[in-house]
Figure 1 (tube, rainbow, N blue to C red):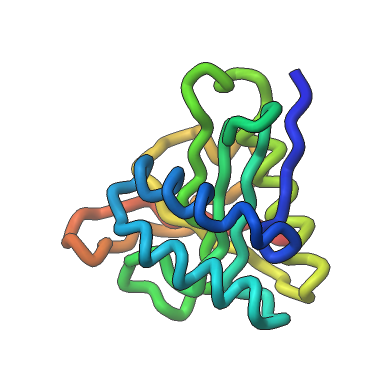
Figure 2: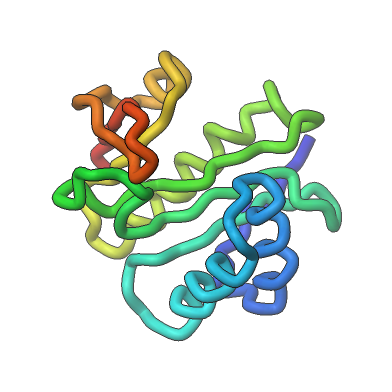
Length: 150
């Protein structure tokens, strides 16, 4: 199956659809995503950035890059965030494509390392991410922190 991965900064007409989609997956208000996407569209900085993968007109997956993904290690930035692939599109390599796309985009901005936090074990290692340490989220829960050289 073919997916088209798009940068929201180059497709601002998709920001409302993308913000609603991300909000529905992560239970963060749509306005928070819209604000971050507006910043992405309006400035030429590396962070924030947002990406969606389309299958036809449907959003099949997406992810973003923000300064900090709600954890205590503010020194480890920027962070890949909100990676999600719709269940019907899983096991097709889309998560790996999104990760590689975001890493390549960050590389084009001169970002040397990207970080992420997750509760998953072994998923990100498949894509070259290295476990660094644990970190507490803003909710107090412990999460695994990973790094990847771009």
